[in-house]
Image 1 (cartoon, rainbow, N blue to C red):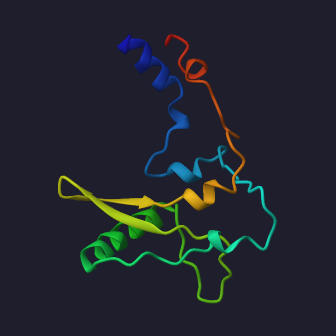
Image 2: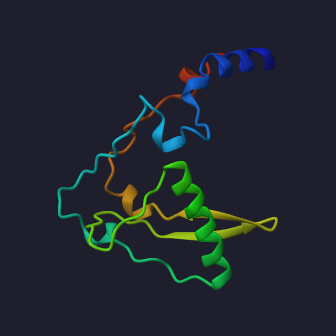
Length: 127
């Protein structure tokens, strides 16, 4: 079983993110998020940042810098119109910070199960 899994992972290694091609920018696998609402988008999709304690703000800056270095995020100029924003929070687990996006409002305006796949179709040997 482990050998089959390793063979499968190696066969499709180009489908996985690396430090050179992070998750959101795999060349040839770009994804456009299509919303079921027209512009101008509802105010729910333009949420302000949640308040954070200094420790969480510092951790957030570290996460944002890492994502910018990978090309997943980019800085937005003060004169750019941002149509969709998602507040993030920092959670802590075993002394390490994790950045968590609040996508609840965004999910209400996306097409449900647009990329739905049965688990069995992805892993044929699974019941």
